[in-house]
Length: 415
Ligand code: ZN
Ligand code: ZN
Image (cartoon, rainbow, N blue to C red; front, side, top):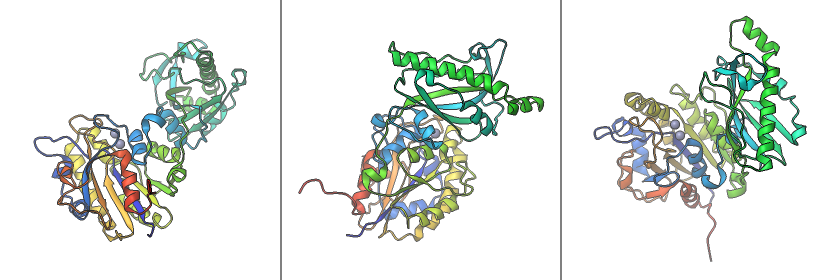
């Protein structure tokens, strides 16, 4: 048996609920996606479980064979992995925004948040460096703080007295006071973690407010990045890397920070593609051709395409349909793949119906192309047709196993 490669194309939020009797995907002119559906086996998939509304992060974990109910503990750890912080089991990770506070007094908690993005500050390197000097050793805690894109960042607290039973400091609205981290149970760990975070918040504000970068911004009439707003806290549950779990080298091609974070969390290499922005003008052709080349070096390659989800969140039926049609023109280059060597899967991570403007648990369409699949009668890539296919209805967590079996990489269970 020869070992074959797996190409997974995830079109974020492509599927919908019917509007009238059609959907953006169903009504779009998609000769290439339909060609692939016609050559493959089709079905529908509950990426997590029937009725469970997936986040893009939890659903991607499931698509790579992880149980998100066991290994997912919030956005914090995923963002921290995405920012390149080395995570240890038991660390406490938060997403961070640089924000702007105003008000009298010394304490940051007496001040009001006037902008949760500090005027979309982007030059944060010197500020991150200043804050990184804060000493939490009196609490027995260390931390790592990294910038992300723009006003974003991630922070990881580590130590014997760390608990995730503490609240966020981000009020999540402007005009509100910065929140104190509160212990959410009466353990010493939760109390000490909250005290450490509150001390960190005060120190960070003191250092940032008087920092030369911010003084300079103030002179130019820009908002100061003088507070760090922590949210999405979660304790890190370290998982086996994909390579340890399946013995396969995995690469992610995505312009979306959250999905890069999932990739790093499970030990994938992230391949950057110029112009892969994660929005509707993204360099689709570049992503697909990069994927074709990556299949020489990797066993499994993910191409994640974001924009259909954005149109779903915007409630934009026509925009979503037009993006799907552009995607269809660009995906034509994948027709040249040798499907006796490569197993290609086209699917989504969840539905983002334009009528709901958010993710729903409606199952997504799946097409699998490979020599030896039982080609069915489905001739169109559509959430309204896929259920007629031979794959019937599967779970996201089973998808990778189905692909491993088709590519002769599955171990035998029993004699
Ligand atoms: Zn998604
Ligand atoms: Zn979304």
